Image (cartoon, rainbow, N blue to C red; front, side):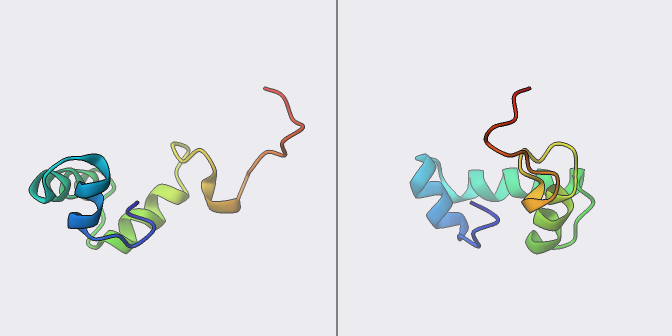
Length: 66
């Protein structure tokens, strides 16, 4: 949702949590990713091994089996 440029209010509504809770989680993620902005956090996550799709890089084809 963060990558979709949704606001804290929109994310909170979708997840049934308060916008302040969203803000807290986003802030903690930004600290862990050493990111100064939300955009930087998304970019850092997308190149990390934790990202399941790696934003198009290293994506497996549907026919590959683990």
